[in-house]
Image 1 (cartoon, rainbow, N blue to C red):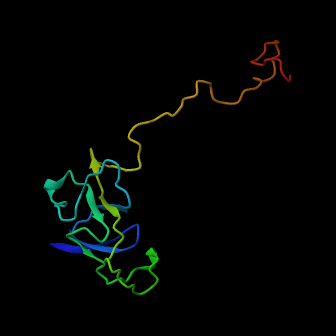
Image 2: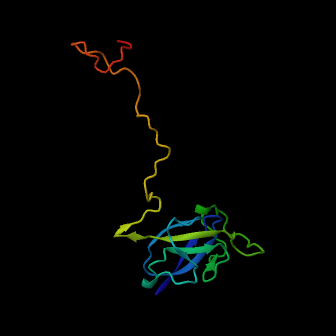
Image 3: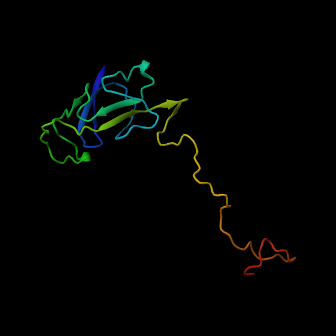
Length: 154
């Protein structure tokens, strides 16, 4: 059984309604694709077990087929700047035409993949000098040994 689920375009706030299965594993809706995620159009299959390699849905605001655009006739929530109760539809239709992405939760080896995690450690311009402040090593010891001091202040 499927249910209508709505998402906001992160660019303009236009609402899109997509038929989804009862179990949702949504991670985020972003104006950009997550690195390493695989996206399909809303008309393609994305929730079957056979679609294990699909990580999300790519929409083009107001243009993608297989969904209902602006299902509430322009009524927008205040969380997207829609304090007005209704807005007149544009002559060209609803939406800004920009792509946006619905990303699902993804697992690898039983752990949730975090799209913000770096896949490998990168060191930029390593400095060959040792870190830490330079200066005297401290006062000399009772036996006259330098204790690491270069004869500076002490």
